[in-house]
Structures are given as C-alpha cells and as structure tokens.
Length: 95
Image 1 (cartoon, rainbow, N blue to C red):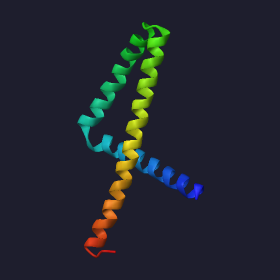
Image 2: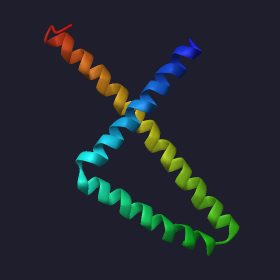
Image 3: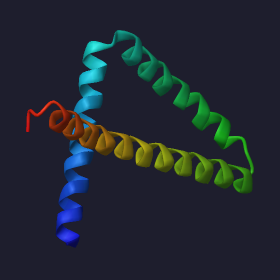
Image 4: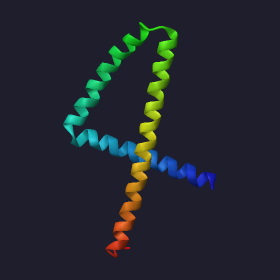
C-alpha cells in the first residue's frame, strides 16, 4: 500500500508541476508576477542578512511552513479536481 501512495504522490507532484509550467506559458501576467517575485527574493535575502540569528531562523521557519502548507493545498485541490471530474463523467454517464 505504501508503494501505491508513493506512486500517487509522485504522479500528483509531476502533474501539478506540469500544470504550473503550462500556466506560465499561457498566462503572461502570472509569468510576470513569478519573475517579479524572484527579483524580490533577492531583496528578501538581503534583509534576512540584517537580522539576528533568532529572527532570521524564525522567518525562515515561517516561510518554509507557509510553502509546505501551500504545497499541501495544491496537491489536495488537484486530487479533488480529479475526483470531481470522475463524478461529473459518471453523472453524464460518460463512464
């Protein structure tokens, strides 16, 4: 069962990353926001360097937790989208 879950998790991660790449290709505004965020990250890192070790560690942990939460939400919503698609296909008797 563990291998099955790992395979599903890997499939979802790859599907999400593929979808994000496609989003960048089709949505110029989103791609621009991502590029601006990458530039802002440089300033963020410089600001972190000015903080005490305790404050820097806190912000890094906070940021990492936020990214983990967002990643879990992405995976959950993607999986829910699959489930909703199957429900819809059954409802319209396509499967």
